[in-house]
Image (cartoon, rainbow over all chains, first blue to last red; front, side):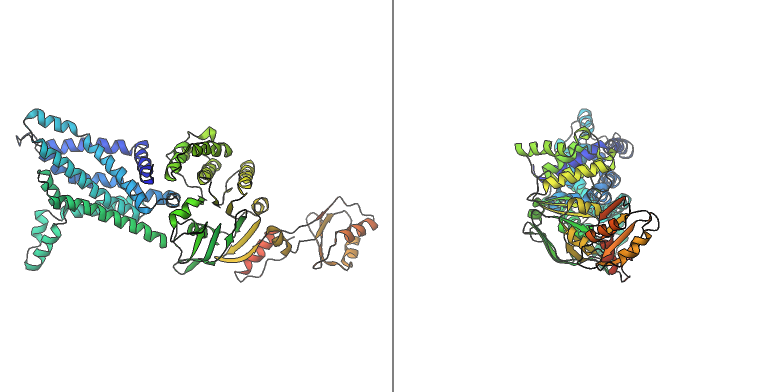
Length: 244
Length: 316
């Protein structure tokens, strides 16, 4: 078994021995349902699709993903187990990969457990299951990017609370940056162009495209690169801390 | 083998480890001795690859910790200060995790697991969470983690801290058994440990190497080395006569229990003459002892001198 798998297994197990995993899963499912039916007007739209469900996903991740990732490195630094982990024959990148994959699979499990919604739309009418699959894929990819941000923030501090807040802030920024309301705030010849450019960094914009069933390579690449970028930043940060 | 080469570590303006160069050979048990904050743990953290040196480097079994960190870590068994462990895991899960991380999957590795568990008497707590263990058990679990892969180099940061005397004895026996053909580096501030375990002592304070010797050599630096102490009621007269012996440098009497200590002049043996004189005086000596030297006194002398303070005075 490679060290990546060993770290992954240990992380996944640590989610489930504490109530965190169950609280997360219940919160995720309950909030998904509430947001979809009461805020997203699931029935009133009269369409057999999961658009209202997917539209709420970024906002849900904003609160729930930081809760999953905050302990990732902060707890290790605080409990002293970081010294143990980093003196085992494993590279920082391997350890980071194991931890990221564990969190990603865990959120993926939460996402998979929303399958009753899928069954419901198929029961209610002829649903475009291709679009729904694309939506799930996009949502999971987006979760990956959020988790990567959280992993980096958790590496920054030994306080889980600080990690939570920093992650929530950074994720909020990445979601809000593409909202039309925000972009419109900065009209003008120079700022306008700049903001439009920055708006391309928005999670929302890329996720909405995927969740409508448009699988553009650029959108997929955006999430993959964002995820890798933040994970790399986290690894560099951990490495930097060893010299300070 | 462990070699450190001008190993240095600074935290801002503070130099925690200052150009430390030591070399520990297989078969040696080296005790890294020093007051709290001397840089023992920082030095070990650099050798283990957890911290990056500000300058200089270290090698574990010839593998440079900066250029070949994974090979160095494979050769090393390391017990960090305080024996950290994942609290929510059971001892069994924890040790299995370490096995997986070190890719120990062969039949021999599983036998090794059983052997280590037995050596450290962890059978009964294998399925208890590490969080619920006593300090001593935690440390034993940490030790088990360090020796699971049967490493040629072992580095233990205060291995017996927080253990009761029986557990200390057990751990020391284990280290003794492991010492053959292995390189062992132990940090401690317990002087009794040095006596019990180490065949070489390095004393550091403020990050600098101050002494490198065997425990016996250090003891020889003590003014108590070769001194004779005895208890005899009504020895006032004899003390004066002892002072006149040509080999004797000084005499001290403990004001509390009246025990007399006779210090020799350098290179002189005084047990015979003192015994003879006491016999001639017809004194009833209840107990007499030839001192080999006091490590705590030497330790204090060496480590306080670096602070610019005067060496500690005679210890009553």
